[in-house]
Image (tube, rainbow, N blue to C red; front, top):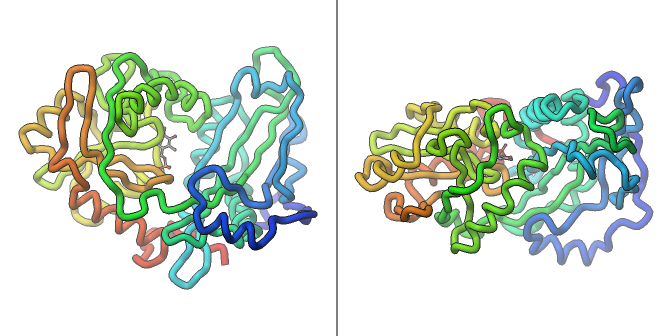
Amino acid sequence: MADQPGISFSRIAHPAPADPAARAEALANPGFGTLFSDHMVSIDWTDGKGWHNAQIGPRGPLTLDPACAVLHYAQEIFEGLKAYKQADGSLALFRPDANAARFNASARRLAMPELPEEAFVESCRLLTETDRDWFPTVEGGSLYLRPFMIATETFLGVRPAKQYKYLVIASPAGNYFKSGAPAVSIWVSRDYARAAPGGTGAAKCGGNYAASLVPQAEAIERGHDQVVFLDAEEHKWIEELGGMNLFFVFDDGRLVTPPLTGTILPGITRNSLITLAREEGLEVSEERYSLQQWRDDATSGKLVESFACGTAAVVTPVGRVAGHDGEFTIGSGGPGQLTQKLRERLVGIQRGTVADRHGWVVKIG
Ligand SMILES: *Cc1c(COP(=O)(O)O)cnc(C)c1O
């Protein structure tokens, strides 16, 4: 992997890495997204020259011209993946090749240059290896990696930029849910959509998140945990949460998840769970499912569980759904059996306690 053509990383030693005692204290209770490791990866891209200047060095502020394109037209994409500690104490990434492929799909949609998949995986591997002392000591912790790319050209005209920077930073993350996963309550947005046909819903770009903040704040204000978006055309079909995909479980053991029609983010957790459920002999259909049907099936008992999934929390049971025209409870309102079983299976593979039959786990060494 390290010898992929054209991109090799130079290493710049950190002049003043974190004090080990302070680091140890932080790693015992890292929370999420506020603590960062000592290093970062960066690679530059310029039109005509391609990718160059690949390095791993001290993490620090970027210097950007105020006219830098990303600050005005939001040419930005990102990924999120985790390094997990294995039973033998080594670290491993989960399906980084899938993140690399999705990063490039996002790049194509945002008119940005594609990064060779090997360079993406190698950058994640290198940062994890370099900052392995930043792995949380708290039970169930992980090292969250955030690869992203921004348009750095100084230019206010509206066209794809001719200069970009790819970066990877790492953030120690605690166990999202300390004891198992409690069921969450979700709010159905009536007034806002996340993604429209032909838009950027299938790309992992910051702009999608900016658009989801007002409806997410509305959900919180009304006492719920997350917002769920309906399709933008008919306002009828369930799409996904602001950053997690959804599954529906029926009393006959069948699973349904909304299809990838371009307005839903193709989650790697979603894809992994479809594979694992099918291996269990369960029928999984990718088909449209309406809010009305969800309510009717939950009320009649035909629908027994629902869960959301994504890298950050892996699998989260949905216990209650509320909207402008009332609310309903799913099953007993708590975590369902299949939800817990699939969660344990996937978490087990990620942490090396359940056999990985798909080559999903990439050891760092
Ligand atoms: C990242 C993301 C997901 C989950 O994807 P994973 O690859 O499973 O982490 C789902 N929905 C949206 C909108 C996302 O940005």
